[in-house]
Image 1: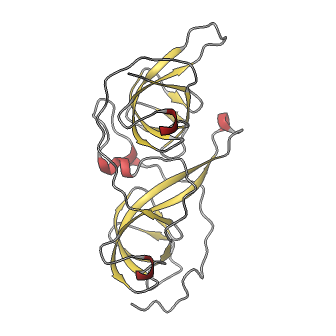
Image 2: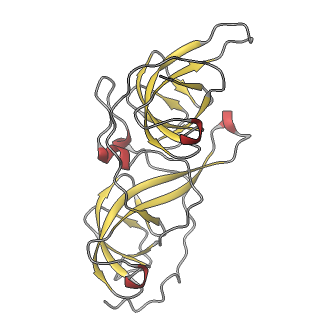
Length: 250
């Protein structure tokens, strides 16, 4: 494989606006998200180093936008343990600018799709985009391909409104959510949250003594140490960024 170009020689500013991830939501009343939907689900950005980046088209390194089924060049190869058949997620890191959370610096890792290596040399690889969740761009970074674990909802548990998590953002950084959509909260396994655990979304009263308003129920479908992705299974009214989330305990 010959590229005729120095890898990493072209940089492009990331676009902050993100396409709506239509695959990241399901109509209300359906079951838990499929593995493909979970692979495209919103996530809070982590500190993990990038596994590489998408450089461009093999015959046009200036090209910026790619579709499912197209061949692209990535800047890692056999020296990074890439072989024919190796898969990667493509992701883009974007700032979340929800007005109600302006005092918090938030970034999301938007999964734009995944690809598979088809031709490998020591330092570069040709790969085919197998699936897209959103627009795949030049300079999207690569993440290890780890297929989401299947989710089975646990039984309902006790609800405590003390020390709740917070709704941060939805699939495209959206701040208004409805049944069937997924969103990220700021608690995870460090707070004892497990995949399949049920949560209750609520809004505190106007005063400490006022009753809370329970908005709906969700299930944790992806978990990290300090964050989780929730599938909103039922909502009595729209859920907003900044709303509270109680983890149901056995």
